[in-house]
Image (tube, rainbow, N blue to C red; front, side, top):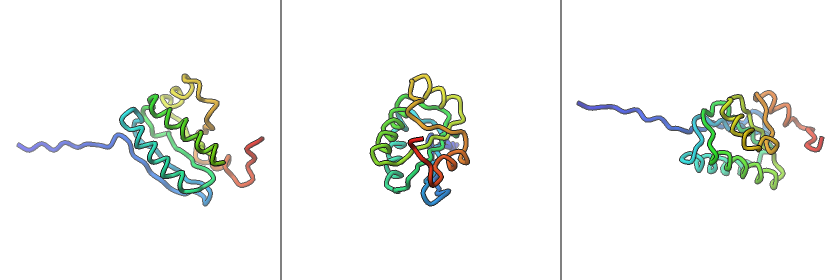
Length: 129
């Protein structure tokens, strides 16, 4: 008797360019110690796109561990050094809670939708305001 076991990838990515100066990276699944290196690699790859703004859609993320938060903090620091922006789309309580209880909320620009992210990254947006 043959058994077919379906294995699903715990972390998946989808990329699009909703505008010339914006790259959207959607992350689907769990970000933990095992998958955080894949997130880091994907963010490094996207930083080479040279768009002014990377929108990171975390709304499909079901779990965000400390390892994932570390990757996000590192990516934010690198974006700041490169004079680029990262905007996080967060709608899931587990993601928001992980960011808030660790005291990291002030370090990230978070919005609830792609429309809000695009409005914040519109040409002429003044980051010093």
